[in-house]
Each structure stands twice: as C-alpha cells, then as structure tokens.
Image (tube, rainbow, N blue to C red):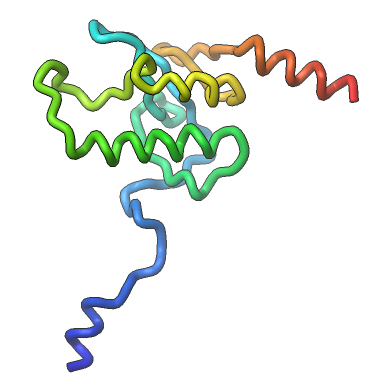
Length: 127
C-alpha cells in the first residue's frame, strides 16, 4: 500500500514547472494586425516563461498577471486570432504596471522609457 500513497504525495516546488528564473529579462512590446501585445523575453529576445515567485518589486506584478492571463486563456479558443498573444487593449492595467519597470523594450530590443518612471527616479534623488 505505501506505493499507492507515494504517487499521491504533493511534490515541492513551483506549480509552474516549466517556468524558470532569468537573471535578465524584458517585457517586450510588439505589434501585429490585431494590436499591441506584450510578451516576456530573455536576453536574446526569445520568448520565455518566468516564475513570478522568483521576483520582487515592480517586476513581480506584471509577471504574476501575465501568468494568470495565460492560464485563463488556455481554456479559451479564439477562432479570429490564431495566436496566444496578450493584447494590451484587453488588459490595460498591465500598462500601468509596466510604467514602473525599467526592463521594457520594443520588438528590436530598444528600451522604452516611461516619463512616469523618470519622474519617480528624479524625486527619489531629491530625498
């Protein structure tokens, strides 16, 4: 009987086993015929999935929300769009979270700076 219970034991670790931790990653904003979409990319700008629990601060919230969106959209079949892109017009709250991140890039890897983040940096210098 112990063999049966061994199979039922909860394994430790993250629920998203395919996710990893990258030392450097980017929130990549790109465009297609359906609009502006967001993805997570590694240093070589290849799409990747990261475990939000491995991160903190302004990077954690968008990662957590992206994971939740991907999980929910896994159950939805969209016959109009044949891709799994996360469009910012549908999830506009991600824009506000990205404004606080310093690792947002365009499709070519060029940094996208937020005026709001710049003003936060300058106000912190005055203190």
